[in-house]
Length: 221
Image 1 (spheres, one colour):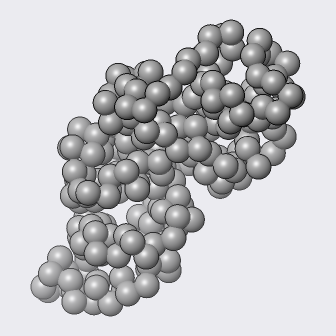
Image 2 (cartoon, one colour; image 1 turned 180 degrees about the vertical axis):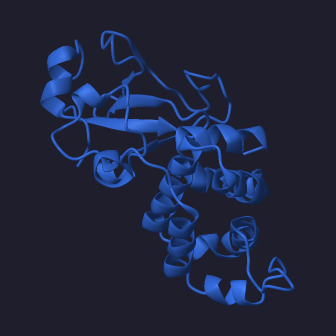
């Protein structure tokens, strides 16, 4: 079921037909939002002007950033939404936005991230046991070392990681941007930079929050 309420949307749109349903989509190149009429294949890019529609053709440039690598992902449920403030939110059907339920107005802690990585990614705790990033004297590993190690694990195991775990991972990563501290520095310099430019960019881009995406993009993501 789409997150866009068909009646709310069609009441404001000059277009559509009796069979039209409307899907919220996010571009994979610049993280912009558009709405697709999945019957007529019309596309709406401006929530304040539903009289403006565009038609997309194969190899169309992105209507927002003009990227030739334009593609988009349909958002099928509130669980796929990362952002709290969404330009199309007034047309959403009744339901809980994921940020209302899980993200709240807080930052993610090092302990929370560490526990999530250990508890959700099979075999990662084994990687840490033999990590070269451990302090040779104390045998402890910093949050920077954890994410350096996780970068390699992530590359090697992405194909078997469930989308639900990717969504949760990148929600927590997005939360680290609320405070510019050592946790955010570890996430950025030891994970986002390390995985930027890899062949799996299209897989992870739909899960990145705004700040994570902007940082990731600077390093070739």
